Length: 198
Image 1 (cartoon, one colour):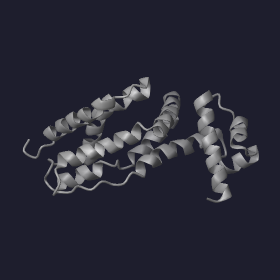
Image 2: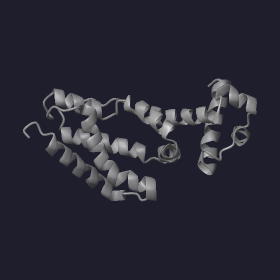
Image 3: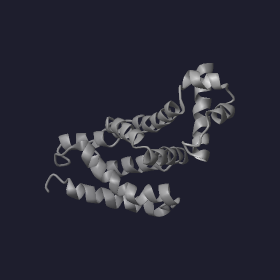
Image 4: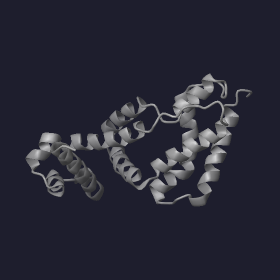
């Protein structure tokens, strides 16, 4: 990693720490530079404002989801098992400490600033989630009835997030051993709704 890339990473890490501790409005650029062990001039060379720094952090959040490998449908394997495995991996990522911390930081600011929120959700809407590709291929193969794959993936993941992501996000409550049965139940409901015979 080049020195300029390292400095950029140090600045982003410091900004995440400062935004978490102080909140975006109270965060100070001087403090971010101090935490990153760079000059203010260096910080502004990489990020022209606190707002641009925050935008870079939201991009990290979106990029982490975008970086997830596209899942393929395998007709020789049971679709139920494929969906359960895919959802388990996705939820494990969303509830990981790093992602959960970034998500809390970003969403708390988006609640405060509608302009930032609109820009974030417009950008998020352009991304293809990791499970929608699997669902699209299953629909094309006739294993699921036809529908809009992104919408269908959103339905499935919304059910699972209700039980396994939002309680942890808001309350720190983890599902533990119950997570597997919750995911299986949600997948079964999804399959019943999208059954090609339905």
